[in-house]
Picture (tube, rainbow, N blue to C red):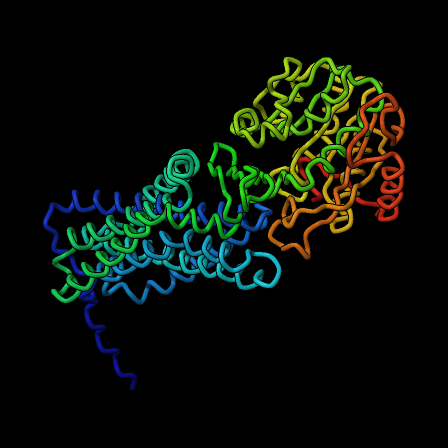
Length: 548
């Protein structure tokens, strides 16, 4: 005989899932929770973008850094969302503690990362693994905390007024995505240009902490015990005090960190719309070093050896007609200085992305003296524009010589300027007898990158003559290896001279000025040395498939 099943006990709602006791009407409470979702989403995306930007600036290779930070964060958000299920019975208290922790970790992340960069010898060499682990650790911690927000907020909004799961998810994610949009736009257009990375992160943490505390201690305070309220209040006050103290001291911190990175004689440090610009030395005072110009942390000009670089860049290309010269980049005026040493030059057009670099080259006493006050010459004309976009609208066959004085091709931001499409535009702008010269990075330490540039130029229909110049004196390397230290810094510069009709002869102009550091014999010998490193069969770099 089969015993009948006992009737199932009635389903009861867990005590932690009951209606919240609110000081306002349910409709108002829902609006406040959704407003909190909006603000938290904006803050979360700012933390992500801040880590991506700082890692790209400090380490280089923005594509890799963005991929690492975002993928680790998304993974951690999933883990955090799963872990938050266990906190639902204390949703209000858990969310308050979560936001305080997120505000502290996210707000101080930029300070911590920059401190490690400045005082441990940077991201390269011995410290590379530990520094990158710190970046991953911050990405993981912030991702875990962001991921735990959504389940807790879902529980809080359902406790105000129960609705179908689909409707609740739609409301929550609508506020979340709109908040992410606002945070994503606020970071590059508001926080970064007006406040900088460090202060911007601290302000974001403050907004995050205040929002979480107001929601929990204001709207859901009746769900908390007296002890929980006191603990949350103290925790948030401590977090706000830490963030406020850091904000007050951030200028002193930046100065100390900048001196740790660049040395004691920093004279100019500014964040433009394009990049960070730092000038050191060049004053001639006791103990002052030679002038150095850093762009986004990478050494672009050193008074110790800039003449060797600029003479090798410019003078081989001036062997032939050179009445009309185009300089792409080179806002410091040093390439134009070498061009104007040829008295028969009629016009020099400089296309520079950052107008602040040009302003410094005009007005800074040390830099303007180094470039020979070229911007006071009536033959020099400056345009502030992106080189790629400018070439698209430039007249055909307008220039006898084109000088690409651009950042190393190994830097992701400059990859477009070393593509087949870019060189195709350059070929159209060159006269038939014209010459193009390209700074292609160090040969000895990055031969594959150098010969990829050569291959790409040839694919655009130009004949090439690669060469190099050695003897680099700078303690820092230009480009992605700037943080590798003097032992691993590149000790040469590589160049590619190109022409539309035939392989250009690699020699100095017979009637031109005599360079101080470059001779025809040395140029020939260094070209042979470069040819000995040739790597064949390399693919062409294009806009849709960069190879650097």
